[in-house]
Image 1 (cartoon, rainbow, N blue to C red):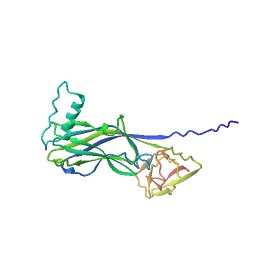
Image 2 (cartoon, rainbow, N blue to C red):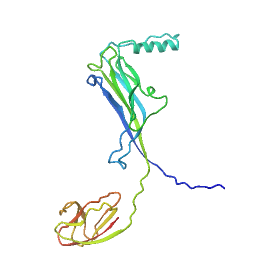
Image 3 (cartoon, rainbow, N blue to C red):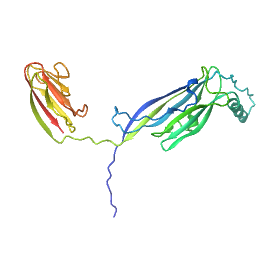
Length: 278
């Protein structure tokens, strides 16, 4: 007998954002290890405060502007030069001439930083660009796990570190995502109706209630304006104004507040009705 078991499909929530990569190396940078890119942590201002992003670097480049060493000319190659001869000539220009050097490293939460590649930095006026993507992947994206990061540092290749106006700028962009299970929202279980008489002295309407999901307040007065405050002291002309003849205000899941609520009227006593739900 075949038994079929029904399974519930859970739809994941995905939070995404774009991140800019921009780091500048100068003579003041020395040989310190500098983070080029690290997926961010979801901030307390986002909906989920305990999740780290993972990143997809889509563009990763470097501008090299070196003038403290002698300029290197591109090798002169004849049309008959073989592919091997061309590669050898370019390699010799980059690695056998006066140069600086940038070391690229990768670090993960479970492993200290390790060297992935070294890039030769030469003087080619006015400046030149290097695509850093091939140093990490043959694909169109560099995948960086949550908590991992790409770092870099300058090395002395026999001609010193960056000097004077030398500058190396690493730039690019990344898409970051965080995948989480959806939170099941709490639903209202019960509500308590209220009626208050609010005068010209501050009156506490409700104490702190961490279970509050909704609160609706209505000014039933035909003449007095009622002013609400999140806190222990309400003042006329300040806070949230409930106009005469049905002015209302609601706290719900879009603007949650579980603290003390106080009120005051601007003249005659006002009747205020409300409904607090948990």
